[in-house]
Image (cartoon, one colour):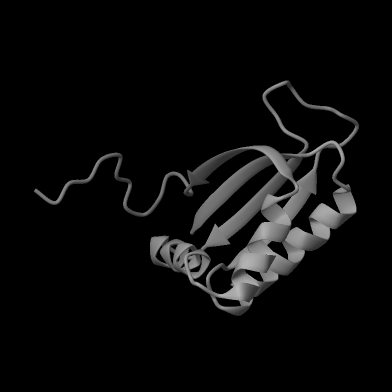
Length: 116
């Protein structure tokens, strides 16, 4: 399991519910194509967070890095529905920070790997 972690601020003029709906449509499209395992969108509560935290947190779970690669391949497709769904989310975002996480300790327990 790999967790793609996105901290997001939307534009001041953007509506939070419109953003949530756009994220749901995009994530469910990816899930329907088996490019993600699951996802959830969270919003900061009571403005209780440090300055390093953004208003929204989107967590996307992948079975493995191959599934993550599949999601990026879908994004690169020359398909009008993909472009529309992605643009509907992206147009509302002002700032974001991203990270890819894995369970730890993991079965491989490898801090460094090399083929040669």
